Length: 344
Image (cartoon, rainbow, N blue to C red):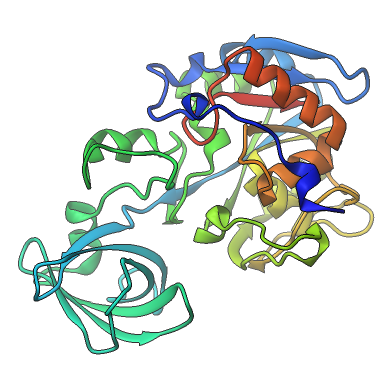
């Protein structure tokens, strides 16, 4: 299949630059695969869409403040985006993206605010480097104080680090527990504790998985044929309690593409989920046969992205393109801070 067949036109002004004032009041398009119907709803109504026998699966990974700003000895500013710790959460050695990377070499040392410094150790590839931090306090504490929300490149701020405190709170799900993501599982941004309480009050179990979202979520699909694309590996966990809840469910409602990929990675050929952990590079595109996920809540994704391909795999390419055309016409808000879609 050609990548070009998964493109769609989007006016730039529909890309949400700020979150909605209230998480639960985002708009929600409900897409019915069986009938092809498209309904305009509000996320507050999401609990009404669930039914007896459902289990809701959420990704409880927590976004770390992975963006830092450093200065070279020349005074030039360099943006650092942390990708993965080399030696655990408390490690001072990280794989990172550096921007601009021009004239950066192994051995380059840069200064950060607060008396800290970072040294470039080695180049991994065209995009990635290994860096080592030197701080006067545990690095985790330094990162919490000095790091900024790792907003995706299509969310622009007037200056580096602007509105960081607000973004650190809103670019995070209310149920985030396990630090490790450098991008938010954005379908979960619409939930509040009140909404989760209402869902549980209706007798719907809420089960958790963990998938630490990596920079690969921003990496565009560049292969002309979508089958030739390769996904980056991401760490995930699914426990016994979640596996049992999913296996007992009549329908599994996955919150986001990340929860979907965990469930499908952990499912056997019969659709049973097994508790496990490890890395997954599962790439879901049209033609994929879903083993366990029966409904999907997801945001509106970039054209020609692996996330949009997953949505097309679940909902059908033609129906998804029709839904996106409607979303543009009805002025839905797109991408991470935007509105959502429930595919049933």
